[in-house]
Structures are given as C-alpha cells and as structure tokens.
Length: 281
Image (cartoon, rainbow, N blue to C red; front, top):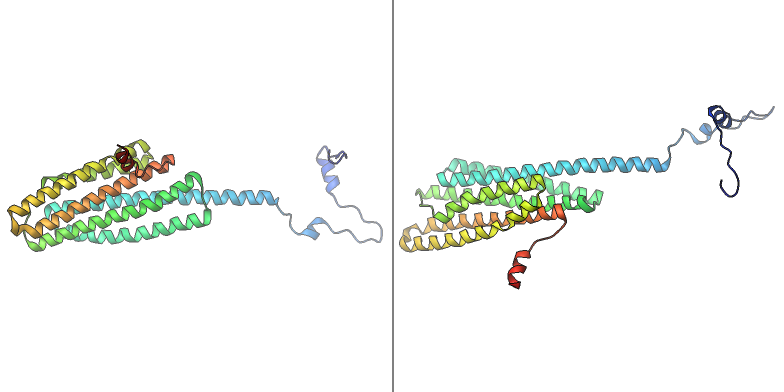
C-alpha cells in the first residue's frame, strides 16, 4: 500500500501479460506507440548496472593487487639471490661472477621502476583503504628497499673487481665472514615472513639488526689492527671496510622490510620503537 491506495498486482502470468499488452486502438485512431518504440531497447536497472560495474572494478583491482604482490616476491627473491652471488664472488675473487651481478642489478632497477608505476596507478585509480591500502603502501616501500639491496650487491661486486685488479688475495677478517654468512640467513627468514604474512616472525627479525651492527663495529676494529700491522695492505683494508658497510646497510634494509611486514599484517607502525625504548631506559 502506497499513499493510502491499494496496489492490485496481477496474480499469475496471464494477468501480467494482459496488463502489459498495448491497448487496442479505437476505429480511425492511430495505434499508440509501444514502450519499445518510445524508449528503444529495454534498459537495465541503473542501480544494478552500477553494482555490476563496482563488482567488475573490485575484481580487477583484486587481480592487479595479487599480481603486484607476486612481483614483489619475485623482486625480493632476485635481490637476495644477487646479494648471495656477490658474496660468493667476493670470497672466490670471481671477477666473471662479479660482472654478472652488475648486469643483474640493471634488470632489478628496471623492474623496480615498473612496480612503482603500477603501485601509483592503482593508488590513483582505485583509491583503496584498509588492508588494500596497506598492501599497496607495503609494495611501494619494500620495492624501493629491495632495489637498494641490489645496489649494495652491485657495490660488493665492484670491490671484487677492484681486488682482482690489485692481484692479491686478502685474509678475510672473522667479522666480515660472519657478516657474509649471517646476512643471507636473515634475508631468507624475511622472505618466508613476507610469504606467510607472519608478523611475529617479522618482529623477531627486527632485533637481528643489532647483531649485524655489532659485527660491523668488530670488523672496524679488526681492520684497524690489521692496517697498523700491515701498512702495505691499506687499499685492501679500505675495500673490505666498504664491503662491511654494504652488508651492514643490507641488514638495516631487512629490518625496515620486517617492520613493514608488521604494518601490513597488523596496521601497527613499530618503526623507532627500539630507539624510543633505549631513550627511556
């Protein structure tokens, strides 16, 4: 009932057909135009059309976001592989392997730019919120950090090439070999936390940065002692210190990504919590 008037609806198919049939024109009167003639093809309900468009847009966005996450995982795997290859080339003074690392870094640079463009496109066109927004910002930030990991791998490869030019096999400091062995393990644990969206595992990795920092300081002491005893090895000492700094920076980047995994999963920003705790203590 609407406005006090009872609406009598047809009770079966035949009544509906009768009410929908055009009226018979009177003698000498032109037939009244049918609805098809006046309005063209039957149009769908506008709200249903909008709903279908929204569903299609959401489905496309979900697909694009899924593909973007897969690209980030592939980029992370490639960057870690490149880092490991650069460390192997360093220990063996493999100049051919170092050149391959340099070439691989160029490919990662190209993919980093392509991923950033896709992130910005989705942010602009879809204007996501909630978990979708966190996933896009996660991809955008981690994408840049992974490209920097590849940059440091390339830097280590440069050191290998320079040591090859010097023509000497240095005696690797214990702290440097510890860094070279520990860091890839941290990287692979982080990759697993990314794949599993494991916030607790990521939190555990944040503390590993302190161990890397301690090894970097120990490396500086070892190199200073070696340089004092063997002044002629000054060039090699500086190059090894550069490698240590590259590895330490990769440790920082792994810590940053671990913090971003926590944000992705929980929405919690834990950056600078450790420095804040240290200041309070």
